[in-house]
Image 1 (tube, one colour):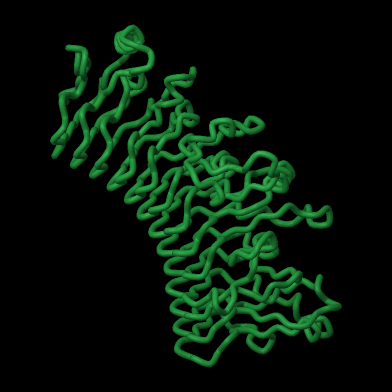
Image 2 (cartoon, rainbow, N blue to C red; image 1 turned 30 degrees about the horizontal axis):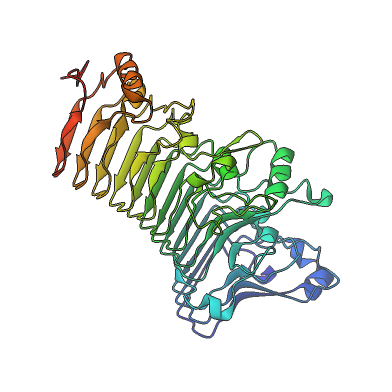
Length: 447
């Protein structure tokens, strides 16, 4: 690299014998001091390198393991396409590798046989990890991450607490804005960490890790059971849009918790075999809300057949920002808003900014709202329900508390004052919109 100090763009294509793009010998770097010199390289593109194992291969350095490598600190984008044996960015190492300027990374159709050849292992287990703990602080400026058909990866981000000597290292991905994953068939965790270490790390930093993340889109990831851990959902304060499609084993969106007595928690915990809704005693831990829905403005869910409800009872009172909710082809869904515990608690469902609700092709869904929900539907403008074969009524009265509570709730409710559009299509079992009252559409807008 010192001989190519003016090189800004590197593209390598159809070179089938290359196993590593850069070979770094730490013993030589330590002797020459080249590790601290920066090049002008800004962009790396790697295409159809069928034997590529890693971008940077690091060897030696037993006596120079703490030597920082800053030669590539100006690299802004990395693209890796159709590299079948691709395993990891750089050889597992304790060396500080600076990728501080990296803002965009795309991996497409690579690593199909990564398990056979071995991705880098997590420090906490044997999962194949894209950004292990030793690397995650080095990519602190990353803004966009796109992973498509990256077959071998099981964990995207591994997070560990820092030692005292590392307290001044960079924050964990504070600028990441967009996360897109598609067809990661072995992916089981987006975030994985030790619960206690993560809490300690968060208290040391002035801003939350991932606090700029605004958009998450996840498709065709068949091993994911839980999208967020409770703590992770609490930290994503700028999250605006969540889009989920074809996650057939997704059990719960805003849950997945640690078992009692175990101080380690994995984000998207896959050890729990039932929906987190059943584990009500874990709904609050040290004041941390176990909720996805307190931050996003838009949630879109499609073809997640293991999902029995979208909004768990413990998130019911924290949905003030949600504006658009779209649900399509979720065959296992029995309720949109989980009511079993809401009816038995003092929690009130808050949907005061919900403007648009679309529900299509949810075959076992029998109702959408309850009477007590209506009070918060002040901003609802569009309601579309189509092809739900079991739908009997749009607004169902609560059964547990009897007629008195139903009438009381309805009498003080502001019923759809801004509603402009209703579409009810192919609902063969539908009996009525409301049952038990003649005041169906108080304040209906005809503008």
